[in-house]
Amino acid sequence: MCCWTLSHQWHSSVRVSGRVMKTATPMPVTEKLIETEILMETVMAMRIVMRMQMVMAMVIAILMAMWLVMATAMEMLEMLRVMETAMEMLEKLMAMKMLMAMKMLTAMETA
Image (cartoon, rainbow, N blue to C red; front, side, top):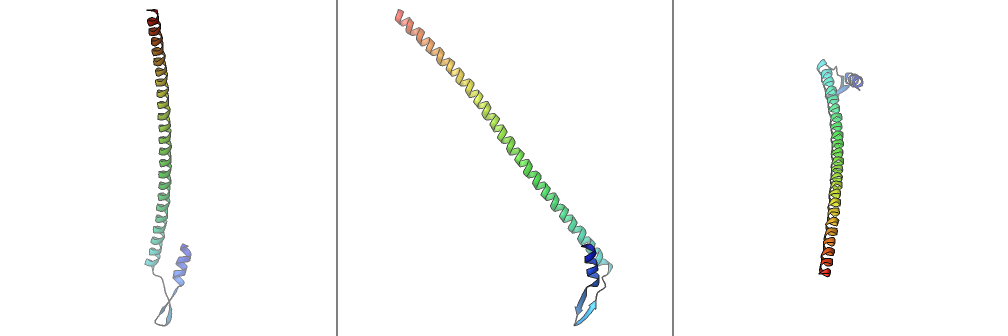
């Protein structure tokens, strides 16, 4: 691309007031072309970096979402465990109340 552009620029012809004139490209134009090419390469590199940053941000977002889901799942499991222990305690309490009620009933019957 670079060499073609330079050679093309060197052999390009310009029509000035009806006559075709060969243009000799001075040194600053080639320097400008080189600067432009460097700028284009820099822009491409920046685009690549931006894409990489976007991909990294997406990966981090996905990982955070997965971590959040895992954390909520663990919280739900913990809540289920707590509820299970609470239900066991309730069952024991109900059994104790039933036992006490049975004892009171037998005590009232014997009295």
